[in-house]
Image (cartoon, rainbow, N blue to C red):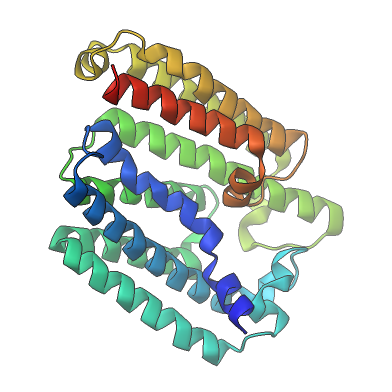
Length: 290
């Protein structure tokens, strides 16, 4: 039972919530214990609510999940956990997350409420509308940035918002690609809007969004505002890790055809992990050790 409950909560997806720490990282506030404390509280809050939403999503999507080669093993779809038990789990998770967000600040609680409302709408309706479903996923990542900015009392630059949004678009299209491959191979339609997608469209969208992400990052890294604030003309050198990370994920999608779950890809692919660690280390050097 414990294993099934954890599977419903999907703790591996919490890796996405590390975006919450990005504003504090870029505003030189990771050395402030109070900021770390509030960001950690925001992280826990967002993670609990996200888990509650995942449970709600699995309750709603159980019939479709039974057609998916991997999702059919989820606790509700497989029958390991009843819908009634799942509802009992979902509500406390969301309420606990909301209470912690309220402790961080009223603004943080408001952002979390927007995230919850958006994802409920996504589960019920929006994920069935092609392209809109991708945009909603990307907005969720921007909301993670926003709650992190509130917790750290750190303003968000337009560059960070745009790059995060575009990166999330790229990852969301990669996830849809996996579902299209399943449809083509087995005929199993795991999502109602898959008729509005095909491999050619998704591949082109991924290439386009990947290119824009890399270009936006390079332009940000060489902008006078960035170099002045960070105090280094060498920020552009970190672009190599961004380029490699994006290309590696495209390799996972196009060659390995295993991009259905970005969080699992990150947690299992050593090359991606190394590129992220190198990027963080290079920025830590520029920001904190220069």
